[in-house]
Amino acid sequence: MVQEHVVSDDFLGKWQQTTNVMAEVFDVPAGLIMRVLPQQIEVLVSSHTPGNPYEADEKANLNTGLYCETVMATRAMLHVPHALEDERWKDNPDVALNMISYLGVPLLWPDDEVFGTICVLDSKKRVYQQRYVDLLWEIKRAIEADFQVMDQQQKLIASNADLLKVNRALLRSNGDLKAALDRISTMQGELLRAEKMSALGKLVAGVAHELNTPIGNGLMVASTLKSNAEAMAGELEVGVTRKRMDDFIGSIDQGADILLHSLGRAAELVGSFKQVAVDQSGAGRREFDLKKTFGEILATLAPAIRQSGHSVLCEVADGITMDSYPDPLEQSLVNLVNNALIHAFPNGAQGQIRISAHRLADDWIEVSVADDGVGIPALNLARVFDPFFTTRLGQGGSGLGLHVVYNQVTAALRGSVRVDSEPGRGACFTLRVPRVAPAEHAA
Ligand SMILES: Nc1ncnc2c1ncn2[C@@H]1O[C@H](COP(=O)(O)OP(=O)(O)OP(=O)(O)O)[C@@H](O)[C@H]1O
Ligand SMILES: [Mg+2]
Image (cartoon, rainbow, N blue to C red):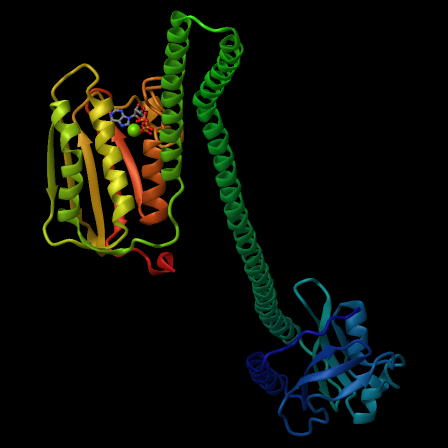
């Protein structure tokens, strides 16, 4: 199948000039560049010379015995000096146009396909000398060099189209990637929710576990008291001694003490658990002066601080008016100071606790509570905010203090909290909260 090559106007113009000069040099009426089409042959370029019977764009059917057809079929030069004197050529279609002499060579495309021919025709007998033949071959080669350039150009255009396709495919896969990313962030959101749910589950389990001891103790004492009372009721029928009565009252008193202690512990635990549940109602929002509020908090902590013997330094910048929730902030500060008092100086060392608060850029406030105590071992550092993580199990620690801080700061105040510590170099808790709590929270 013959491929039709598109020839740009630039090349057509150039070849027109070549053909004109060629016809002049050969001194013929017609110099032609022919192009083969699937079923026909076409005059692509025809020299502008007097007496030229051919016009560009003219087409002729193949298989009619044209000179050019033979050139294309044999891929060789054809020289017919005088067709009418030549048995093989006397009836060829060009004779009708009085073109009785012919010299032509094939034009080959870079892939070796036949493009067409370049030829000169005359109305009289011509026997060309070798240098004319050589000249025609030279012109042929010059045109074939142009074919090379055209071929390269077409390949460039094609590879450009391929590049465009690749580009489009890249854009599409980019879109796919974005969609995948969206899916991942949705999944992340779900995971986060699931994590929160499982944290809640753990919390509930922890609460149940913690309450189990005081309530179990209470139950046991209550049932002992009940059976004691029943026994006493029976004994009273027959009469009891004074000593027996004293013992009975003593056991009731003791039982009541244990009950009071257990129920007190349970109430205390319930109190801390209530703190864990952050008040999300948005109630309690107001404007307050940070320095004044910190002063009030420290006043309530003063007895505990005095008793501990440690010194507490408070440096809060003047003139910071918060528009936020003072209760969660107060609760967090109290828990942090209490922790420093309880955990930082276990061996009776005299320590210092430094509280500071100042404004950050973008209207955020940074609050820090730092001590110069024993610090927190690296292993524990990641767990101190977990519910029920405590190093004072059985010594009054429930491990909820920092969990409450975390919840209040992140959920109520919409800020963040971090801890920095090295063993032996104290611990520093840093809260960052917006000075004006986000509006949607108050809704
Ligand atoms: N300033 C500090 N210095 C050293 N260790 C600390 C400090 N603050 C907290 N910790 C460690 O972090 C743990 C967790 O603190 P958190 O306040 O959550 O629980 P807790 O104080 O043990 O018990 P709770 O506060 O519920 O009574 C503590 O048990 C302690 O080991
Ligand atoms: Mg604590």
